[in-house]
Image 1 (cartoon, rainbow, N blue to C red):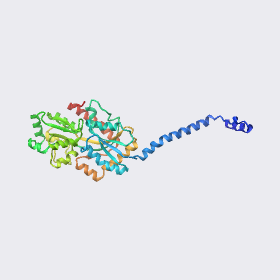
Image 2: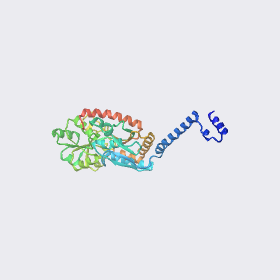
Image 3: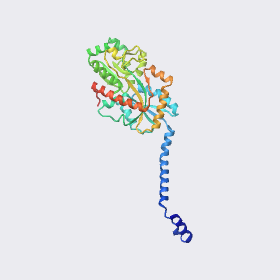
Image 4: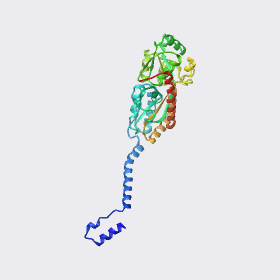
Length: 357
């Protein structure tokens, strides 16, 4: 009615232009407002949807929170080329060592959740450290989105082969006897405070009644260099990073820390078998995580490609030969695994009395 009235006024008074100003109807105003709001929402959402659909449009960083040469680094470099091929962009390994993995993990926790920064997390960064450190620079649950477990590995108790021979230590029981007779004279290397390598050693000390001086490094790589050089006495290293030195005869493997023997070293007993430490078990795991807020579509795409890569015969055989058990589970399964591991290692930390300021 209002629009018809304006039209009649215009026809009746063609020489009075002031009468041509129409009063918009409430219905027309609401319609135009809704159209404008919808258009604005489309403009805002379009870049985000486009970003998800076209991701990745630039290189992606996989932060390894330890120095090069360790198992975390080995696994990241095993899957990075496969992801590069799958997505048509470079997946670059970025080593950021320090504080038992906390430095690198914090860097990822503070990064944008846009899919361009990932973390190769470990049992240390997401299972142990929250119980071990008085203050944490990140929340391993709230600050991350789990993507997938990449691999699980046993640790292995090793000594410098020549040093073990000169000290008359040929097995775990020999080691325990020597350590008890020489308290504080043996040095124990690890990849850093709070790592599974550190905690495996602490658990061994607690269960065997021995005392060794702990020397934390910024990753397995530099720790192994000193082990091979004979500067350190013992290490409970992740099996994949120690395997080359064991095969070369430079390190002597006394026992694996898992509940069962490793198919990669079938002749090496478990710590329970070799040392009589009933119930001893301290295995490690490694998995990809993204900063909180990373779109589920991107998380799902990465998980699918990692699982596909881990199922290829070449990578599967390579990891198994190093003592690693390939993963590839879903984000939901990995999240449950992280929660369970935190509870388990919190008890180990409490029992061992280990603490880091």
